[in-house]
Image (tube, rainbow, N blue to C red):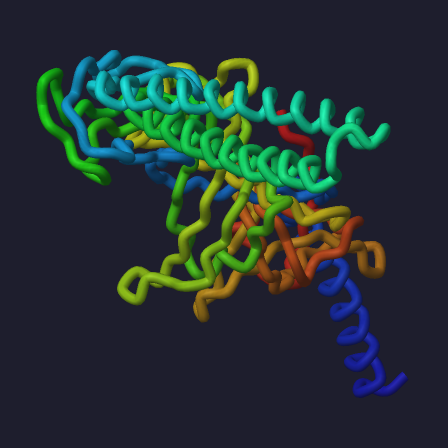
Length: 365
């Protein structure tokens, strides 16, 4: 065997031994990592915004006629029901006029009754030619005229009755007296506010929603209200208005919620109180892949990556994959793109890994 052939054989043997030693060394240097599988959930993103409670109904009450205040029957803070009398104006003169018209109506009714008797009598007499038919016609005409006068008298009486009732201010809806603006003995004119009434059986909550979230809301969006005045209380609410005109400076849009007083849940709440609205922005039947936030790695360009583990030719290797993030919920983050459901995601040791680096999976203690 020539010297050159012997040298070549020794070199080949040395390379084989060296590669085996390198593989053995690399296997012993595999980085220990902990992995998890992504969890699949139906995502619910929560949006929390603050706002102020607003009355659904709020009215400045005024009398419909001029008059002297006889009695204010309520004060600020009183709860009233629809139809309750809140204020009386002096109606003595109006009642006298009503009594006169009632008497006039009674007189007209008596005259009509007599006219009907005369008509009935004339009909009997004319049937046997004891009375000229012309007399019957005259009596019938008198009855018709007095029936018209009776109708006019009743109309005048009804109008006067209405004027008497206008001297007594009643509550147009259930609520709380917010302000009393007059006192007994004062003269008030028609249209001048004398009381302010606020409904409390329903309340609005107005919140300003950022422009990037406004399009995700709808009347079907689930929302809860957390009033600051009653810590720990959660109220059900409903979206009733999405105002499509934004605030130029803040780029926000007004959303109005309504809360019903079912089970007396609005007890203790008044317009002007502050509260927080929590919108549950469900994404329907869509499932999301969620991974621990600790698994995320930030890339130099500001994007995010994950380290995953794959088996290749008998070796366990780390693979760095770019991902697109969704919403965050506690310690979990949604992965929109770049990850498959059966991936093994590195959660411990990922910071020191390189792409295609040898790893070994260990269980967390």
